[in-house]
Amino acid sequence: MKKAAQSQSLIGLGLAKATLLSGVLISGSAMALGLPEKEDLTFGFIKLTDMAPLAIAYEKGFFEDEGLYVQLEAQSNWRVLLDGVIEGRLDGAHMLAGQPLGATVGFGTEAHIVTAFTMDLNGNACTVSNDVWEMMRPNLPTDDEGKPIHPISAEHLQPVIEEYNFMGENFNLGMVFPVSTHNYELRYWLAAGGINPGLYAPQRGDTSGTQGAGVQISVTPPPQMPSTLDAGTIHGYCVGEPWNQQAVFRDIGVPVITDYDIRNNIAEKVFGVSNEWAEEYPNTHLRVVKALIRAGHWLDKNDNANREEAAQIISNSYYVGADYEVIANSMTGVFEFEKGDVRPAPDYNVFFRYNATYPYYSDAIWYLTQMRRWGQLHEAKSDDWYMETAQKVFLPEVYEEAATSLIADGLLQPEDFPDFEQEDGFRSIDHTTFIDGIKFDAHQPNEYLNQFAIGLKNDETP
Image 1: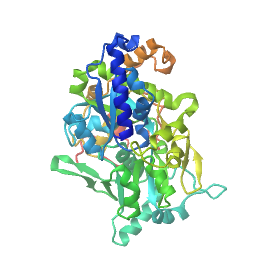
Image 2: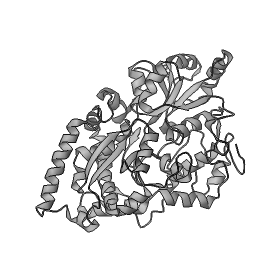
Image 3: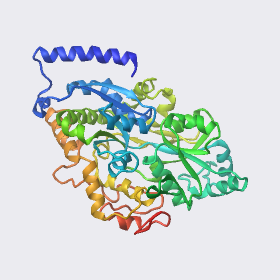
Image 4: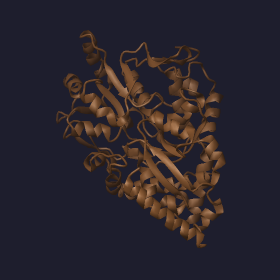
């Protein structure tokens, strides 16, 4: 935690508590929710652009409006962050959407983690080294200006992989965590282009994810991606911002595809807490969700009018610690591929619109299908199991209560949210598109899995 922010936090804590003691209590709707059972909280995050809702809720006083006195602490990697939540060192954290699900089903560390808030949609990309790009580019279709036509299929990566293999080298790719959105997006893109990314076999103690693989995919913490690429340890990676744009600014790599073109508008990061914590501090949990909803709304308000300010805030070393220009490249609605090839990307980062903050069961089910597809779930599961697991981990009922309180406060309007009377927790089947054109129907996860040429289906085991 930054020292300046800690000092501000402590000053704010003293003033706010003094106000409470003097009898001027928190806002009326907050009283209707009940006072927080725990006021002093520590939340973890990874240095990525999409930690922004936490920073904004802190910097704009949304946490304090709810009687919460928060410290934000950067974590070295996703495993340390998850362990912090499980062990109670952290009250909650910015998490990969797959983390609460992976932990709850017992892939890796087993613990019941829940989420009532989706932090964002989209926001990732796949980047390759300059050497790999030079090998790919001559064979790519181009437009009238000679620029590559996007999205770029992984089919164009296959000859490069074969060339590396011919020279006796593995083709190495990085992602951030086994149950990360990045791992599943990278695998989806590769498989859509006919490249087998490999299977996991946890029942045999094999958690490498490389069985039958045409490439070698391994874990690298997000902030280390550019330096690892530059060192030649990996030939490409899938990560969130600002670490793809950082490769462009440092002239060490080229993003070839964004996750918006691989699969879009499914939960990217969530705010996760342990189920035990949520049950012990229900009012606190509701208030945290209220503050984060306000932060998401602020980030997307008036067609992203606040994004430049947000990029300035999170560029500070105690948040993301990358140059403002690098962060703003994606946060303000554009994305740079080759150096100078800047293209509009208004939905590269989505924090509120499209009901982005709502924890949809269908998003949870998509991640569970990918765990099954790549062997992290080594046994077939019934369609009912997918739904029951989603309901165990994603908590729209908590979100709805927090949203209703914000509406009662007059801070947000009913039209800012889904129609809770009609909402069933499933996004429209046409809301999300995939690079291979396959439709995802969360009501029929096994039928969805059976459509793929690469990956497990039916009763297959790795």
